[in-house]
Length: 113
Length: 110
Image (cartoon, rainbow over all chains, first blue to last red):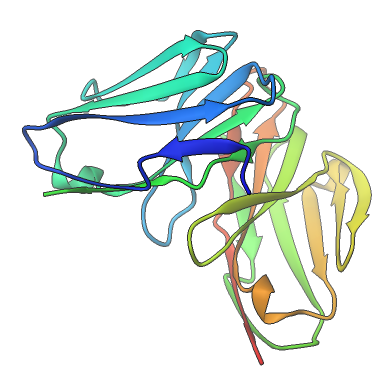
């Protein structure tokens, strides 16, 4: 069983909807990440939070809005997405940002219609 | 940015065979990890190995940081080893972000 929990497992949303992806870890990790993975491609980094502060934003469009309410939780708010945003969204955590093993959740498979 | 290439891109093995997967990177790194993504999409961390050699059961990994490559060895492969193997590196540039390689897709047949 993964120690990083993501909900929901699957999500179908229209282009005018607003939805949120949630991620939770209880390993005491202080860095949390969002990655996006398209089919047959490697994961691509979107955002990094370190000690609850946004550390890296990989020029992600503003229709994706991350939030880190506390050290255990990470959200990704979605609004006005496009069909090309359909992908597997992966959350991960590590003891600290950089030089520590990454632990991934099982992902949310998102379909935008 | 740093480039990470993995080879071979695809590999088909008979159960019980051994294999070696390679990861080449274009710049010096201070963090290298190997992951296995199973057919359901779950990414499992296999090794955190910025240098040296580690072993975990039938799997072992070696990173030669000075020559900018890492190897993942799978011995006595099983059908459950099927999936995609990624290496991921963090360049020694201070940006502290992990960049994934192109992946090796492995199919182990019974």
